[in-house]
Length: 416
Image (tube, rainbow, N blue to C red; front, side, top):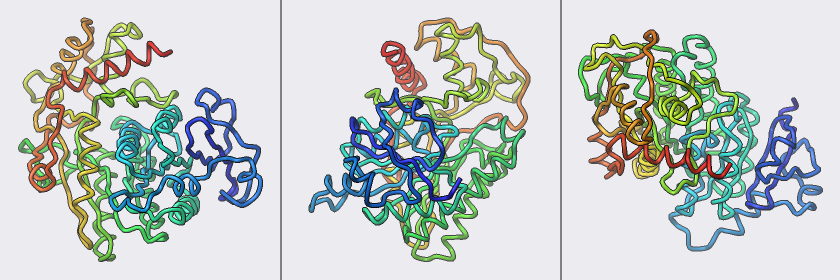
């Protein structure tokens, strides 16, 4: 593929731009009301056929919806915006009036999520199908979008995040998590964007001696996923030390569940994602819907109250609000680090019981072997973000969060 060859796609229904930097098939887009323009070029947006086709270009729509009195409105780049957390972030940012540019290669995201974001775009949304591993493409996209409206903040969600897969394909994780973070920093430097929020993980802590964990708890990851995240954190820290005008916030969050309470978006895994990579809530709900006879719990011999892993579960909307709160934490030449969690641990068995209560179905379980790299027990001390940024989770119990997930699944079933 030529680095700058792109298929330009514009949605006349939703009013947002989709840029595909890879070969793509028009029929894959038809169900999402995204129309393929008859145009292929060695530049993304030259004068000529694309403009003549009356497609909506991001520069046009950004400028058309901008006013002269928008001092608090930001242009936010969201990497991994077609994924679970990123799509929720994009919708929430748009609902607050911000401009949002999403970068995603759709390897783990879903084009349906982009379509749903577009329905709430208010002409302030652009999407680029781009791989962060191709630095020249990332630079080109950011350079173009920065010319339309200065990029104020980058929120970096894009990653791969499955512990079992990380053991099987460690190089994939070091490339997609660590190396791609380096590429993003290089591209940000190229367009003089100096504010980054990094989506990190409690997996960087590993097995800890004491819970809850604070931001100063030693980081001793026990799997390649956690190690790749910790390495990316170090890259960011070292970069900020050498660039005093740069500011970063690292959010180490815990297990994410739930769906947008207004049902604008929810979890939409990539269609070809293996079942073994799905979240525990999806495994429970698959049984509740009759798609599976039972779900398998990975081990019951952990040193916990019932032998199953204990985790801190945070609602996706609360997590997104933590990222938006982090806009207030930027200080030039500094990296701020916050844990983001509810501050209570639930075992896998307690999680399954909550799913039973929410769905009204007696979800059957089987006990499988313990997975390598699974931390036995971890939950957060999130006092720092509460105190410094005033962030407080709205959803504080499993049942509250899981009800939004189940409502999302029911709504999708009714609309299909």
